Amino acid sequence: METQIKKLDYERPDEKVIAEAGRIILAGGLVAFPTETVYGLGGDALNPESSKKIYAAKGRPSDNPLIVHIADKEDLYRIARTVPEKAEKLMEAFWPGPLTMIFDKNELVPGETTGGLDTVAVRMPSDRIAAAFIKAAGGFVAAPSANVSGRPSTTTAAHVAEDLSGRIEMILDGGQAVIGLESTIVDMTVDPPVILRPGAVTKEMMEEQIGAVEVDKAMIAPDSGIRPKAPGMKYRHYAPKADLTIVEGRTEDVTEAIRRMVGETMSQGKKAGIIATDETASCYPEGLVMSLGARKHEEEIAMHLFEVLRRFDETDVDCIYSESFEESPIGPAIMNRLLKAAGHKVIHV
Ligand code: AMP
Ligand code: MG
Figure (cartoon, rainbow, N blue to C red):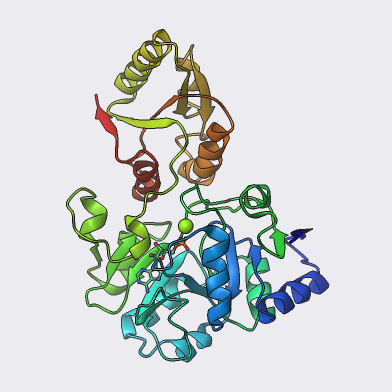
């Protein structure tokens, strides 16, 4: 299959292209589309055959449910069995935006879309192209991140093409995803609600609206053997080809430790890479240094993380050492992805 790539102007997306993308979805095909978090690999959420195609295109295990994207808050009531009052408050505060909520599903949503679960994850993206596309596609677009399973999520159309060219009908190119990390996922079927995946909408932001919000224990203690409630969180993710290690501690100690480890790696005849920031990039005289952006602008770090992981895959480095990013509101979301990419290999200095 030849994948068409259509560049769209964010301010005035071409209506003909959007309509064509919508028709592909309604006919059971797949279209990758931009959102403010990452690119999505979309299919008709109400068509079981479309969901099966999504799993096949990504090579994704079929027990890992898809998020249903809507463009109109009212559409939530068509697929959720019940919408708790707290969910309505969160919807009011954060939709459209980078928050996915989980509800009990009704029979309109096929089990193929939800990985066989009785619940459904729903999000209303704020990206204008995404909203227009979802409307044109009938209002319910199932979409996981538009990457081959196990690779970093995609934040540009070029990354999507790298992974999915020839496997899907169309890619809508809306430029760089501005957040760059997947949405926060919160389970609203329990009270207090539980965060299953951290993202740009933080625990504190939600608590300001609805009081106590908990965090899935499997997310905090990855080696505890506790089964995560978001099935996708149990899979190894984002892993670069090279061996990634995160180094934690005071900045001066971290840069010094990384310099030493890079030296050791090179003395073994191996190639080393470093994930740094604009503030520290010049501290590393040896090794291939890639900066995520300025540490003082945490949004830049989030936005560039997946891209840098992908760029390292194009090189022949054997080991990558990364600085860490605990502070800042989006820090937990950044560290969640980085820790997964590193298989939780962390050195404290
Ligand atoms: P992705 O769209 O690739 O970011 O993956 C979607 C994430 O949402 C995965 O981690 C899924 O496990 C999670 N998810 C989707 N639907 C549900 C659900 N009904 N219950 C729990 N987690 C879900
Ligand atoms: Mg994903």
